[in-house]
Image 1 (cartoon, rainbow, N blue to C red):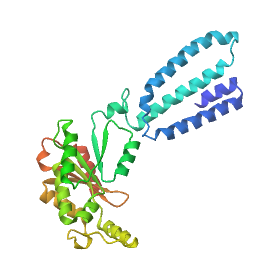
Image 2 (image 1 turned 120 degrees about the vertical axis):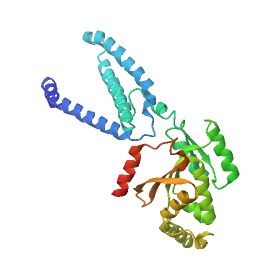
Image 3 (image 1 turned 135 degrees about the horizontal axis):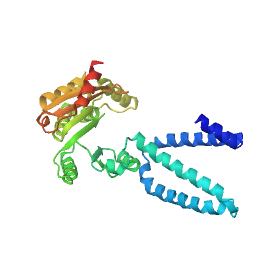
Image 4 (image 1 turned 90 degrees about the horizontal axis):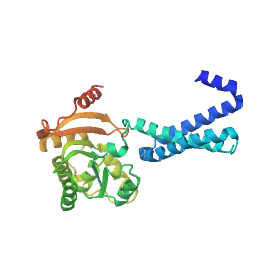
Length: 298
């Protein structure tokens, strides 16, 4: 790079070379930062990129004939701007695919074609917001669902699974939900929630809220002048909620704890379970188990 810059400086004005170098560095930096925004699918721009490349190619052929005769000297600037735009777009696509670890020739649509996620939340506002900002609408489906409503749960989940000829999900994610189920439906509600969840999937990743989150939620209600949660003072399942949920899932609902992936930045454990009857038919990758065991040792 230093040799190339030196050679260019010997043929062109040094100020022009440094200016070009600075512009190139700023463009590359801005494209790199923008490519981190993976909600924009840059791989869908490959058709546009091909058209622009063809435009650049034929423009170059025409300019090679016209410029020596100085018929239209301003075309030089137009060609340079077009070339910069094409190569910047190509850099965006390449970086985006690198960040997502997509192999050559594969787009986000191809990568997500075999993946189907059903995302549920009780708040319709959050569901609409997630649906609007979803980067992979073909792979993710959002629904408003009160999971404790057995009739609606059965209808919506069965309808989704039947599209793919399935009766259960491969994996379920329960992220920061257990506390709200527990506070609003009591001990039996938590037990029932975990029972339904474990019956719907072969693997289950749970992020239980610790007991201090329960106290913080109750304290916020009191500060607002509202009544405590109906079941807060009558809960028998309390204390170490991670251990309590592990016991319920392993002793009552036929699941096996594979590994604990440590704690999140909010000091919440990530627990990975597997249904015992799927040990042979749905083997978990050994590398995943080993990484979990290594984190537990650390």
